[in-house]
Image 1: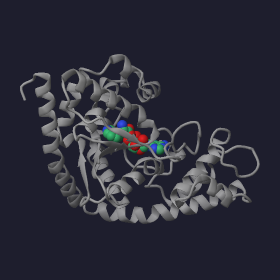
Image 2 (image 1 turned 90 degrees about the vertical axis):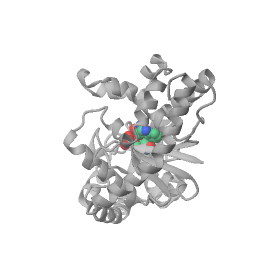
Image 3 (image 1 turned 45 degrees about the vertical axis):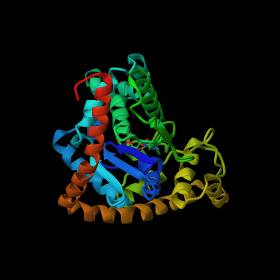
Image 4 (image 1 turned 30 degrees about the vertical axis):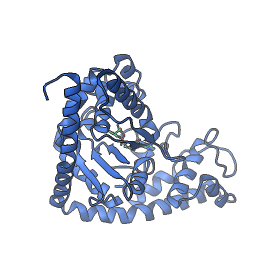
Length: 327
Ligand code: AMP
Ligand code: TRP
């Protein structure tokens, strides 16, 4: 299968990005044709610092590499370096129903959080650019966390509509969402998803020190019930801690529940902190090594661009021809 996915370069990734998306990517890269992108054009739809953007791109690439994405197996590249992403987004935008874009949950949520003058056209158009990312490579499957499911469904409907209206052009991709860890919740507010931009104390970031990880996990919001039970509906905070523990241990949440059956919340949090620290520290060490070789990272991303662009060019040419534009 051809696989495509991406993450926005916004400083550091967190354990939600890893469990919701990257862990799946690592399994897929051995047997599939994978494209993993650094979606910088998406990053500029919300407030950002121009003088930090390039460094954030290199940082995210360093995380991709330290976590085990292998440029010998997967194509790693920067979205803005393949201008066909923007070009196809324009073409697809002309068939994207305005009402459907206005109903996108992420757009509505972001618009609520931002000041009115920060809500820009790019934010509204975000899912169309994401559809272009995916369709350019004739992608068959898109491994993402649950929050992106709606965007992949829109991508499918845009592909189908384009094929119907102008003739067969795009493969219609399916979404790949992990079973239990598709939505890791904030440690501070279990009603919300873990996100480094909302509340950093609610996230376990790959750049956090051992002390920060421990402090944030020990202060994680749970409930006032007794005993360790995996019940995502009634006890979302506790279920989230068990989910993270189980996913990193490659066991099911109910196995984790059994393991901690006779423990206190405090014991569970202590054990989870230790587990997270031992998982993250070696990755941080790898990351530091990569960050000393920015030229090597840039060369890998350039190699990725050189592999991705001819495929993207071919698809855009087909789409333009089908629409009656001069290719
Ligand atoms: P982003 O940082 O928003 O670009 O997200 C990159 C990837 O991580 C996407 O596939 C998201 O679905 C996934 N992701 C982000 N936050 C979470 C979360 N809290 N739980 C699970 N997956 C997540
Ligand atoms: N919108 C995704 C997110 O916020 C990132 C993204 C952009 C993406 N383009 C993509 C994910 C294409 C999968 C495929 O997480």
